Image (tube, helix red, strand yellow):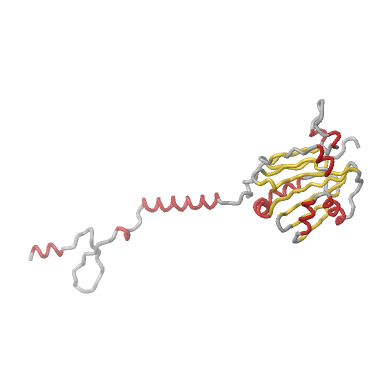
Length: 246
């Protein structure tokens, strides 16, 4: 009987006692390891996992987010004629001779414009995203314009010398046009936004120095959805430089 009593005697490590009004003996209950209460090591590990999850979520923010915008540089354009294309001598610099400026994201590449191209369609400068060459920013100019024509007429005239622009307008879901006046100089700009079937474009047009300047920012729709904030900044950065001699 003593041996039987010792076998039935509950172990202090593997028993729980449940209050009861009856006179039953406490019964041994084996606690599985997974049911053990979480101790400090487990709590610390859980906190580390949660922190890692928060960091992973924060690192998956969009490419153009607050505090994560790319750097920009200012391009100084001279709008030189094809005959004078090729640079300036002496102490002159493009900044001193600039007729217009616009911003370019760091990392974008400049495409060198040929003298023939400059003479035929007026392209003066162009930059592109090396990761997607069709995401680009460029400027054309035409001499002999003292003032802007009506808004609709200007866009139609630009399309005459740009087949890609013609196609984009023809397939566009919509073309929006606005007028903007520079608060500091009073310079008038026409602005166009074209939502084409395959690409999105922003165009800014103005007249100065008897020239018509047209600044283009264009990207395929996929890149537009990703980089819209940057592309709009490029569009808004374009402006002409006042002639210091006038």
